Length: 133
Image 1: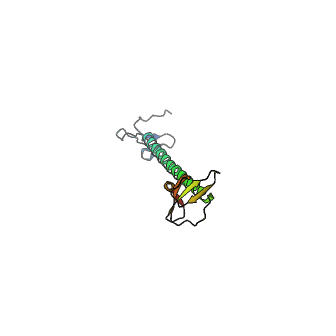
Image 2 (image 1 turned 90 degrees about the vertical axis):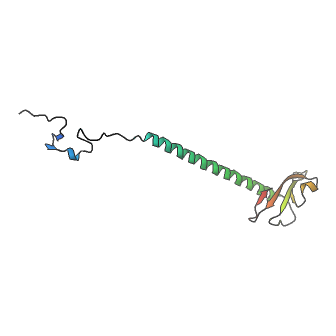
Image 3 (image 1 turned 180 degrees about the horizontal axis):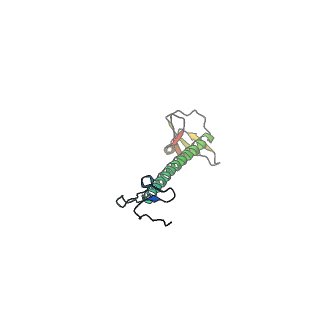
């Protein structure tokens, strides 16, 4: 028995012996719209660039905040290790000095009013954290 081949534009399944154009996941007629794949590479590249920029910006913000926090910690450590014989008042500015024997001390006397080796002036804020003036 000779098999008769169907034309190319007819969708016939040889295994099931049925016409199954309606169940195909792709276009089967000549007049069907062209199937094109979506170019996602440009979108991926834009997204990668955006997320890299966002992560880098966040990293720089965190790094800056960390450096500020460490500087604040060092100032507070320096002042709390210094000697002083009074209780500092919140909202006042005090001055840190260094003696010849490298001992540090806190004073209410401004650097313009004395000849001590000044390390800096500091303000005690409401949270009792020293800030450099």
